[in-house]
Length: 125
Length: 228
Image 1 (cartoon, rainbow over the protein chains, first blue to last red):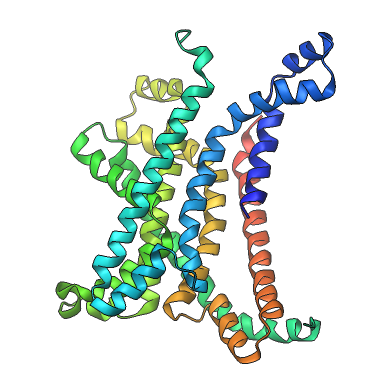
Image 2 (image 1 turned 90 degrees about the vertical axis):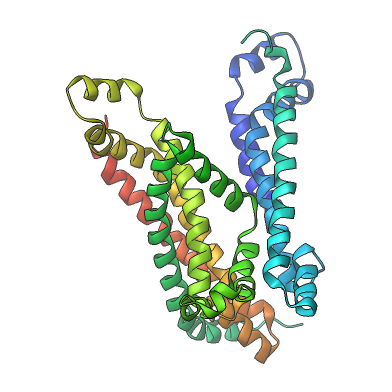
């Protein structure tokens, strides 16, 4: 499922690449493979990062769904725990906060990555 | 394992029984969530931090946690609290449908308020300044200039939200509700034919999504009939 969504993000990013840069690379005599690996791919990543970060976040939250089919994720463990200690509110709210911490980490990492991707522009702005 | 097309077709009418509940949940949650989102976005856009901060925290919580966990907190978790169990609200919170609606509404409100905020921020500042210069009050400017344009700008993102809410209603089956997915699970338990049954359930969702997307496309065309 992530594959389907991410494909669209990457496609959008590839389309967003400045055509002039590709043409310049071709004019400099780079082969198609070289243009792809050295120019298109790094440029594409930079554009795809925000969308890709959103996918990571929704993937993280979708992992909660595996408890429905009985795999032992955090939610499944909380289900079992609350059936023993009869404190479902405490248990599930804890799970919610664990997810909140995880998604905060993902957001922070994505911010760092974006900063890294645009490091050449620093000072220019 | 054999694949029986006949079973797929046979299960469709049964699954359509669950369709009523899926649609009811979808319409109720989406409409209430959107109304709530309008209120939230007004608070969120307020320059007063004691108004915007609580909304920010609310949105952060509901966008950072899975909807399934939110649903479980409401349905399984709330009965632990004495206030709800012995209070007047128990009549509502003991109903799985109400819990599913409640959790979905709060979730939709968080996402939709961010969509609307994006729309409002996208409105050309010059238009706002022009209407202020024409002597329109702040409220008039918002109602007659900002809101219509922001609505149009938010529509593509909002249609995505409509589709994801439809898919989120499938989670209602985890709290014993017999929506399309719930009915499908029941039939699978009786027939041991997960492929055929879940595939026909997926077909129903696919058709619904198609209708939503095309409905919004028509609306978009109507709204932008004056453009260009």
